[in-house]
Amino acid sequence: MSALAQYDEWLRALDQRLRELEAEGHRSALLVTTDHGRGGGEGWSEHRWNVPGSERVWLFARGPGIAATGPVGTSEKTTLASVRPTVEEWLALEPVRGPLFGPPLTEILDRLQVGSESSSD
Image (cartoon, rainbow, N blue to C red):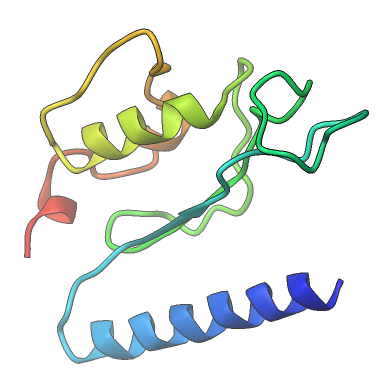
């Protein structure tokens, strides 16, 4: 639990620094996620794709165009494979598509200023 408390403190400090930079006119966004979910059962702590639940992750986002709405659920099962396509669409980047990528998370994109001022500096 002390490791989790330390990560929470680092996120808080990073968030505070970004607020200070924004007050000075700098624009930035912060996206934080995990490389795998906890999963369950035997092997849950290992980096293995076949541990049930390990594909379920969380995503913390803050910055220009991101409404402070608190937790946002999704209507369908979503996985880490959808994080990159979501960021690409949000920042109006050329998407990389393939069998390893999921669909962009529309529940998140609907709350953002997709492809607008949020991607420019």
